Length: 411
Image 1 (cartoon, rainbow, N blue to C red):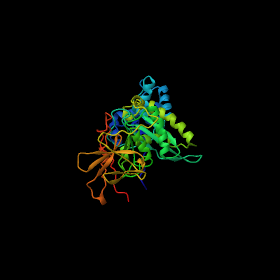
Image 2 (image 1 turned 60 degrees about the vertical axis):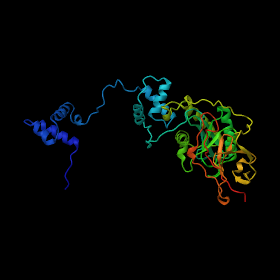
Image 3 (image 1 turned 180 degrees about the horizontal axis):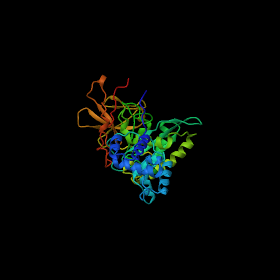
């Protein structure tokens, strides 16, 4: 037969019953039951006062809590959390301070309130990383499509997002029906009219702003170059190059898309417009020391020209026109560049090395051609993407050549 295991209440009751027996030795009883004399006398007093119920564990909660968060403040925390279900204690506290709420509790206390009210999500693991950002607004905009999703009325939504690198200000959040170049161009045109032109734009290598590693130019990126906006493509298979866009997409998913079904693009856009105001002007941003992006952004001094300006070249450039097949002639050879430049002019600029030339289009170096190479192997090696720089003064000579132009005779 197995041994009977006593419960804690049974042990305590047995101890006090034995202690009440005339002539009992309290010290010996405490030694045998493994409790302190002070504890044994405490149970004995409670047992005499109220009986067996006095042996139960009592709450250690203080009778009064003068520093306890008021119910009104707790309700404000819950209300704000309900409206912004992805915000944590730090963001909620900062927003309450912005509202001028009196006696705002600490971030840890707000987190405990969320836990007590059953509003705390499972913690997501974080990884330490180093942040880089441009020194001023409009030095660099990042652009990408968020993963598309289906609509209940049919079709799919392709969210187009454009973010200012310095301030994290969301310049574009558009519910698009496709990812075509004309669609993106129209949205950028509206953004340029509102915010002006950036110095450069960073994007990945996919359509509609990328073609392939040898010739990453499309009609959309050529249009940007015509506007004097430098084009930067991220390293292939390195999404962290656009880390701010990736992080923005995670926030968009958590605070807008997750768990929701949208009927059509109009409904998507209505929600996007509402949330973009919150993101830019209300939501504290961890990377900005809990400031809002709107406090760090200012519009560009470069206005959008309704008519495309003429492409300017350096006095040392040899001007050549790109033919319909995407090639141009130079020193008796035909050099392949990209069909996206057909009808445009490019400038071939000497480098100081015999036979080595750079190909420029306005403020952007497109690549190099090397006349010293053998005809059957003549091609230009692209420079590493990391060598791209955005000039602080706007001059062309301070821009390193980021993309090379593949050269080969037309077959």
